[in-house]
Length: 406
Image (tube, rainbow, N blue to C red; front, side, top):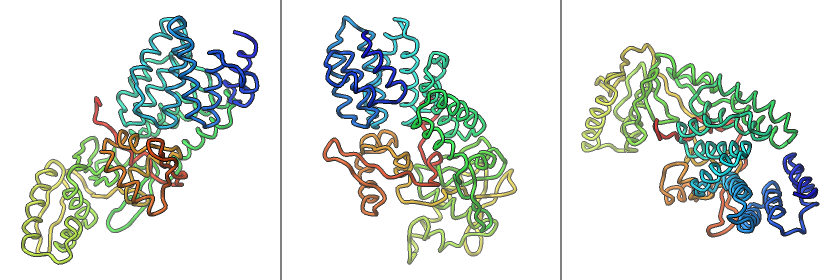
């Protein structure tokens, strides 16, 4: 490897893409193409970066498997940054195995981190943890170690483990300082601010209180019966009754919890669950049916008793019932939660991350665009959606999580 290639590689490692391009901008050998591709990625021109890396991989060919594998790892990283979540993960796994077999521990570890980051983005926390467990942090560069710790913190925050998240972010901060890359340090600091930003509202006995993420963790570990409007579930300690797929039942549970310790009038329940302004006998009959279904669902944690005016929620094994809600309840909040990271997302990537159909996601994006909350960039398949980061927006509590083992 010649001196210009070495100098360009060092410049890229230090986060100086313009310095790298000074040495390789006019060269078309495979190594130069690869470095130009990485430089263009650091400058934000992802389309050009992908094209250059593909050319480099083809030029290296089968005779130089390590160099080709490194190009594939770089291409995978660009796919993640540009939120191309449908990028073939098998190619990354194959590249990682090649690098590991040839003794390139640093790039193999970096490939493992990218696989974990991909799993985190689509809510597969167990898979992300397994990927991280197979990485030896000592093999990572300072910049990659900072990114590794941010993924660790992201998993902990999504699981409401604020202590481990804080430790991981401190480690990321130290690694970012060692890397001497200002943009990386800013990214770590931005993530750390989420622990100091209100993450939810507590609604109890008609009063509202803002909670930090660690307050939410304490609440959910207590014996309080929590109707969680961030995850659409009813919780007490480690027991969870999911109602995300039963919106009517959850609407009734929330209305009953907000009314506690008093009863909720039938008219209020009808308006909340069925949006019925003028209820007739069919609405009242349906309310009785849905209350019966909710009573059966909540039996391990609470009972629902009929009163003269409506229904009242009575906890079992708890002294208090509260509602946990986002700080600001936005329509299409889950879509906004992903876009709040400031990156540009395609509708297909959002659908994959949310576990929803692309048509449903597109309707949400159209509604948000009409309200001037998001904006589209590009056309056709190149179209991406983004919004400036929203201060105080509860990203972690609105991001979906796959069931254990997912």
